[in-house]
Length: 570
Image (cartoon, rainbow, N blue to C red; front, side, top):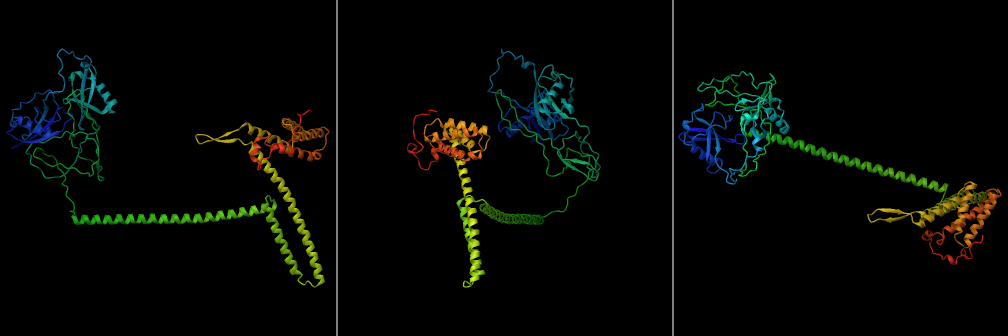
């Protein structure tokens, strides 16, 4: 007859439960040899402790002798199962032996290492407390470090509930506690089901029912009852690295809850378990053969293909529709731009006829006048085709004379427009040139940026441009005299024929203004002053920035404006 031996390694909080089937005539020494070969792959010396349940922890119990046989272990009510704790008896060889004369650390002597075993998750936590502290301090530490609400927590020591006001030191130097959660309602449910009766060969096995953590389940719509998944109290095997030094053997564990893929559970009747009550017998449904299953898979594959092909077809249709809409929008945009360009050209031609500015505009007007003249001549010749008739010849000559007179008036109007355009073009050219002269320099920096720099020459050109604008604008007489004074002081810095002419004309205009002469009588004089000052600005000797705008460099010393004489004697 074989015995089922359930063994758990100490310490209790970090090991799994191992089950061995051994002959009843074997001793504990044989159990130790078989167990060490399975777990450690080598022979180890062990001490066994007998217990009723692997969840009852009593580390102070006396170890069993290895010479005992399994038949002598009759403490458990089930004769074919034995529950044992195993502790490996092996000394650390890498640790230096502590000297007997070494004094004990006074700080460590006041500390208590409390081990808390979380039930039923199967993991532990170690808390270092001080002598004189109470259980409520340990709960507070759990709340701060592990973020656990200790209001619904119950700690037990050797199966006895521990009160919050109890001192920790009364439970020993290294106490072990178990952690339980308290729930408002019990997990029991009244269920009435009918099953076949099983003979009571053994004593009934009472389960310790408690509120299990919710890991998913289902609810019956008919009566509203909730059914939870089965929860196995199996401890996860932790692969620990054995160390023989003073480093703390800390194992990082993770508590993971998961939802089972199928909602079902069952409990079968065993020799050591007697189920009381009536249970419902669940019958299996229709058996599904491999051919039926394969047919379902093929039908599902066809459905998936149909849906995917439909999706791809709709996607392709949407792309074609979008391309067509973009092409239509591009055609409309091109037509709109073409209409805008034609409207711009027509508006430009209309403005060129009303106020021509360039030679191209005047050439176009002359061509249109010539075409109009030819059309009128052809029309007159058609009206009077007989050249031998004196009356028709006389009428033709009168019509041709009127056409010539009208054409002459049109050419005179075009000439006036050309003179006006030349004046405006010259004024715009002068303004643009002066603006370019006074513009600051653009210097490229090492970092790639552009910096504007106003050099002394640019400042000089800016001052001359401001004086020229003052001479050519219509301003009051007081401001006009101030501008003339500034221009006179500017040109008197140089002694030549041009500057002397400017000074003479400025004195003449100032004299006329003092005599209250009308402004119309000084129009020509002002025009001469502005023209001479413009020539002064365009001379590089007086304005160095003007040298950049000369098409052909001219030596000022040989020009008629350079007649050096003695300085001003005025």
